Length: 202
Image (cartoon, rainbow, N blue to C red; front, side):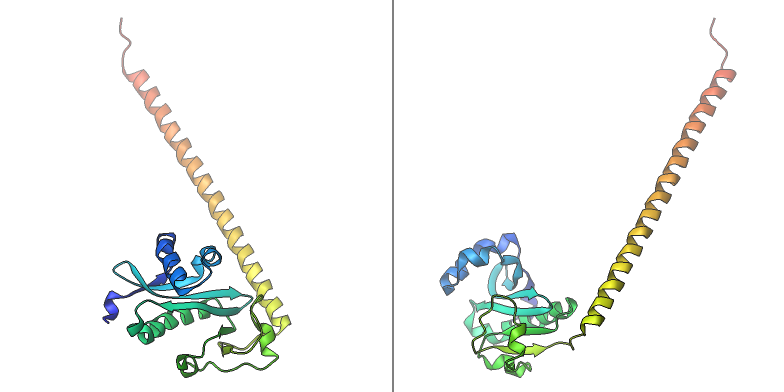
């Protein structure tokens, strides 16, 4: 496989027809996944979906789900490519952990490990707690106080950005008003000049 011919991206509405056929062939719940198709990162070649993996993000936890590859001979390489992309997305979203229910050796090679009983309580809501889960810690969990402080700082930054945008908008309105007034004044001056310079016809 030539990596240059394989595109990795988030699934769009244009991919839904292909995805539904693949889900049906794989025995997945098509009606359920159709509502969540934007969770899927896909690998395509010449417009054809050849691999996919869903990433559910919930409360700083990421859950990998419904991984599938139509090109079975390329499964290992496609899984690696998709995982690199998903890992970057997870880090960009500030996720604390990523979870997967898969026994493939690949995940343990990527430092996924079996979680303790307490950790299982952090699984995204609706996920069955029974065995088989592997998890990868991406960063340390902050204390509640730190999270509140981070949220406070985020809110303050958003408020400052909004105020800055409003000031800029007001400045632009004033500038536009001045330009219009100058334009009108110029027209009035030109009309007056024309009136006094051009003699009236008899």
